[in-house]
Image (tube, rainbow, N blue to C red; front, side, top):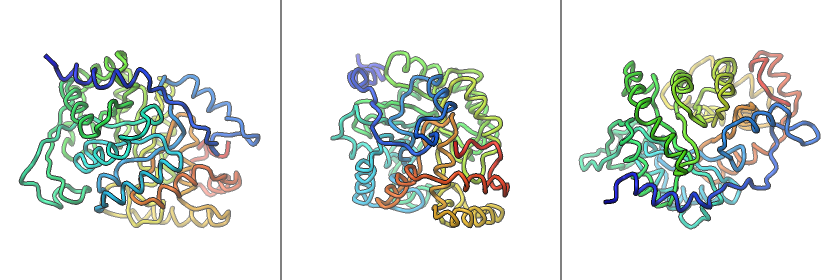
Length: 378
């Protein structure tokens, strides 16, 4: 009898046998000395890190394809993904939660005809989705449009297997490279203070199940995808993750806690960071939006104005400064800004290949707009 486990193995092992990620020859403008060689600090972290290999130090997040904040047509998202591919993007992150399955379906449709060995794909577990004939558009918060599904949380080992089976079917692809345990965090309003109870479930269920899948070659690595440091720090103590999706915790505007506490703990365990939400929900791109919720903090607006004034002196866009800031920390393997239009993804990729003058970083430090220990301009 074919169990969920054997389904995943049969679907994934065939692909993973020949799916080594080969870094593209696209020059990165960050983590470099003046002569163009990688900084010693970044080289050391790369050598000492886990075995997950990223094709470049940036990628594309999947909130936009999931109709985050506003609806986007299939054609528009397909054009956006095509623009990303043509710009050299080879790391894509999605989730069943993004548009209640819509983001995965759209990524899978686009990637279906691509060579599976050419790109890295991550998705998430923690929610199981079921059809909901009573779904009402506008009832899913951040996600817009007729999504027609509902979900329940499941951080057990069986939940992992069910979630990945469902994701493979939605994607229509043969394998998933990295799996993040999603939203197991105190800021998840559904869980609240009970997030630690669900963490205990994951520690006994999801974490060992994902470790076993990694050891069997079904996936390349796993970690947590959260907006707060507490679950990451706990997971480092009780499990053996490879990479963490650190969302809205290490950005141009807020980064001190990650810099002083989270990243040293991750480096000690040789765990890489993927930076989600590097533009703080579009805030660094000039949108009047802060992260994933309503409200615009006045202190952050003032900080944005001051940083932009410095960036303007050097003819560098604020979004470029934000992306370059996030990507330069040696623990960071990749930064994944989102996009829902082709021009957005093109601008983001260009930002990763733009030289930001060392004098700009010095000015930001001198004016106490970024932490003095921020590893920028190296």
